[in-house]
Length: 175
Image 1 (cartoon, rainbow, N blue to C red):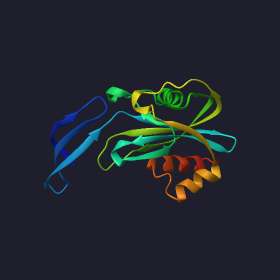
Image 2 (image 1 turned 90 degrees about the horizontal axis):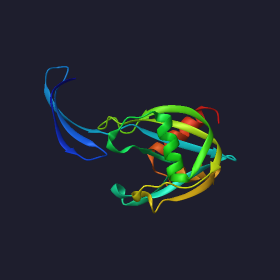
Image 3 (image 1 turned 45 degrees about the vertical axis):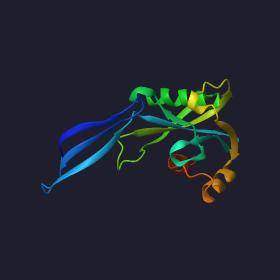
Image 4 (image 1 turned 30 degrees about the vertical axis):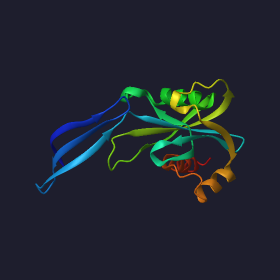
């Protein structure tokens, strides 16, 4: 596909929505709407054959959601992925990790967003103080045994695609 023109439809500190006029390979015209966001990091905090998860209210779906810690920088900044992962783990859980391992990279929703992310395994966890953002004030933190995490995925308690995909990366690394 070839981009003919592009215009910003909406912008805030977290995302930019643009509409691109495109030309397909066969020459026919079309329109693509794209959400541009900065990179994100997901952390799989693992200890004692279980995981630390956070639960928070997700406004777009109107429900609370159990997830691995994850996030982006404001301003759609693209930063060092490991630095971002370390920041998110500390901010959301109060934990620091002695060891970090990159498990993989993925796109959030490549059908309409350019946002990509890195997935890290965090081990050797050390407790500390939270540094949550205002939107995260109602966030809860809990540890779940691996069997309980898998049950939560099977019964629909966990529906977050990033968390489910990141657990897949964890399993692929033979953990």
